[in-house]
Length: 202
Image (tube, rainbow, N blue to C red; front, side, top):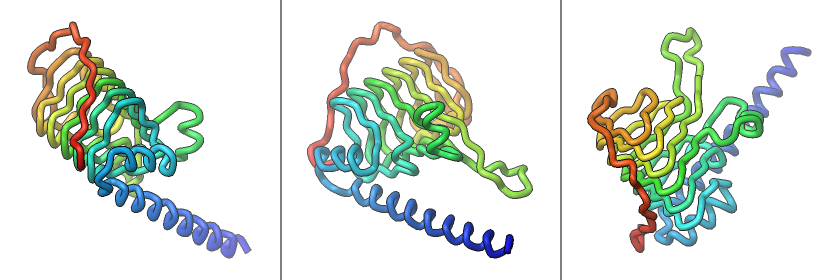
């Protein structure tokens, strides 16, 4: 009897996984719509991405658990970005702790950036998934093809050079680059610009 119950639970889990995968697939298709207005409407209303005022998400963006992503005001997400909003026991975790991926205001994220909140533990016998939230503070600039790994906090006004792999926290108003990302120099702290940019058909 216990065996039968286990089988039913597994079937339900697979069914839910299929629904979630299809939902993410539809979100990916949304990224190909050549209109910011329509894309943002669907991201907000259907896929529950939190997107602030005057922010833009350029085309072909991919979300893994879109409802786990929060984007602030006047922020630019470049083309082909990958934004991971996953966390184990997602609904419980978000209720207690907030969004797994939080991106602040006036953040500039270039194309083909990858941000992850979960990964596999290569030393675990079962190759288990482990995760930690990612926080990107206001006025951060992230260059093309940057990869940000789980558990990283990027402080206000920091700059990540193109191609960097960020494996640990980045202090505010610092410029980092390389694999793994290392300190290069400090950035001017007197920042007062407001980003508002979107390519017409991207």
